[in-house]
Length: 228
Image (spheres, one colour):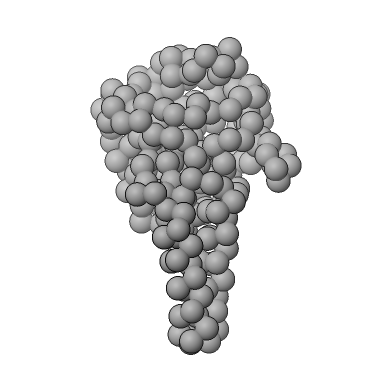
C-alpha cells in the first residue's frame, strides 16, 4: 500500500526543522548508514545521528506521526525506527535504485527493527528544487512522489525505489521505517480499507448493528494477524 498523509508537521514545526537543517548543521556522508547493496547507489548528505539537532528533530517527528490517526491505521506500528534526516543537492544529489535492508539497527536506541513499511517525510517545498522525486516500484507500478513540506508518504519496505537527481536547490527530508504488528502488506491494506469504510458508514448512519458487526470483523482479523 502506498499512502500520502497530509500535514503531518505543523507550519511551525516545519520552520524549526528547516532551521536545524541549515548549512551549519552537522551533515555527514550519507553512505555512512548504507548497507552493502545501497552504498554504491547512495549520494547524499545525512544529519549526524548523535547530534543535538537530530535528537530534537527525532522527538518532533515521532510525536507528529503518533498523533495522526491515519498513520496508526495504515501502519499499525509495533516499533518505529528513529527518524533520520537527509539532504540532496549539489554533488550529492541522488540515490539509485535499491531495496531497504530487511532488518535495521537503530543507533539511537540500539533496537532492531524489521522494515515492513518505509516512510519519507518531505521538509522542502516542491518549488524549492528541481528533480528529487521519490520513485517507487511495486505491484502497483511506478509512482513518482514529490510532496509539500510536512507531508508523508508510506510504502512497502519491499519496494525497489530511488531518488532522482536534484538539479537545482536542495531537497530536505526525514526517513524512517516501521515494524508493523501486521507483517504483510496485503493484510494491512485490507484492515485499513475496512477501517476507513467503517468511519464513512458511521458518519452517514451512526452506530448500527451492521457497523458493530463489521467492527467485530476488523478486530477479529487484527487479533488473528497481529504480533505484539
